[in-house]
Each structure stands twice: as structure tokens, then as C-alpha cells.
Length: 111
Image (cartoon, rainbow, N blue to C red; front, side, top):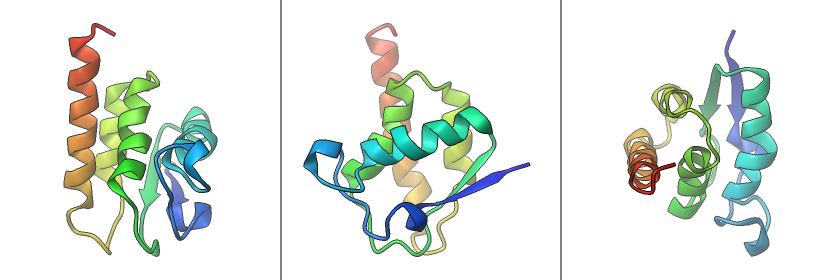
């Protein structure tokens, strides 16, 4: 059974890339919300609707960061494939680019 994570429950104003840069960061969402949820259920749907905006650094740190943290690329790719955003039609494509870049980088450095 799929579990749905609503980003708006984390914050309606997602912040910067790192925790040290302020509240509701991509790093915080990834480490404190998403990774623990994935450990309980690998079939997660992430719903971005109802969020007032999110920066590219937030998105890259969440999704590219999953790859850098060693989460299986197939799990990450499935997260992107199934994410929900009725507010931003191009969100999946943007996030897919961050994931692809992180996979290429990881492959180039041999991890």
C-alpha cells in the first residue's frame, strides 16, 4: 500500500538546501521525513500540491541527495515517476534532471 507524504504538512514554504541556512530545508525534509518514511514503506507518493513554492536547491537536495545518501536509484526514480503536482506541470521533469545528474556524478566518482 502506498503512503502519501504531503510536502505542505512539512512546510507550505519549503526553504533552502541545508538545515544551517534556515527552517524547512531540503536536507531536513530528506533526512527527517522522507528517508524515515522510505525505511517504513518503499512505496511512497510525494504530493507537492498546496506549497507556495520551492527552490531548485530544495528539490535537488531532496532528490539528488537521496542518491548521494545511497538510496537505491530505482526507488528514487519511482518516487519521481509517481510524485503528484497538479500545481506545476514541469516539476517531474525538473526533479528527474536532478536525479539523473546525481546518478551520473555518483557513477563518475565510482560510488
